[in-house]
Length: 438
Image (cartoon, rainbow, N blue to C red; front, side, top):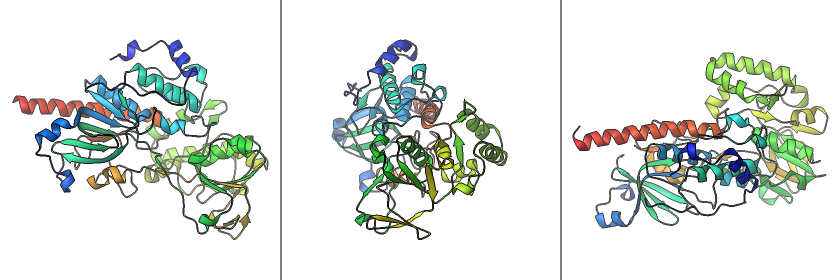
């Protein structure tokens, strides 16, 4: 295994990123407690069955930025680790997004263990830059990935975890779920939507803004994705209307030419929440002015309080607010229902857009995998979502990158990964002492 210091030079990484392919070839696979709740969860007494199962010390589910960070952290602690990925390449959530997508987080604050993305990627790397970086990172650290392998279920098997996948059954002692914050598109069920005669899609299906030049587009949702897609549509020449239910806190991507993310992170990490909310509100007013005249009243809660209580990040503006002020876009109230080729708003107004793009968020999609273990909250987010400690009902089951921070998902992954690897190493050391009589 290559240590981080033996990774290729930065020039090699740049060369690889310039040649990023749409998919990655399959990587070669190296050889490698809780009370039972159902018959499937009970420990197996068949030693022969255990011998036929593929066994690993640690398994990570998901080959995105968080999953790769977790695998490398575990490897650095001496754990034999494999990654399961349902797609055919690393970073599949990035590969499937729209062409204009760029990181909202600053490049120097968007790196995994070791080197970050090269300066040639710019201040805010593109979708393809991120995919190329993840490919380079996995190859540099010799991460072993089983592609085209989807996790179907997780169960206790004695003091091990048994994984049922689309290709085989596996056993491991340490299990990390890193399938991502934005896994399952959350599409509202409006009355009449099934009979809508024009284009209606979730933002996960949006591919390219240039395809909407000259068209009237209704973007539903005033969150981060809604603002980003709307700004790209405006630049592409579309006539954009945004339907908003809850006014967002809005953050500028750059403040006077300086990235705004470090300030957001500093306020959230160093100051009392009430004071941080006040400073953000003042900065927002100074940057954007009074937006209520344009249909965006003040958000009902402070930006940090909303994030802590609801996991809602601020909408990062990259020109959409200016487009509203110039009259090139507008904001209306929430959608009430669909009627033929029309969209009826809550105030009774009727719109006739050519396309409706729903930037209405995502769900984690963990219920079918680990919901029976009692480790999820009512919102489907892991109760212990910060890497470590693990949940008392599920020893040695960890979640990595299952939160939406101000500082960005790529930065969050290594933080959780280090906690997980440290906790696993402590557990291994304690087990050694018990079984060796120390």
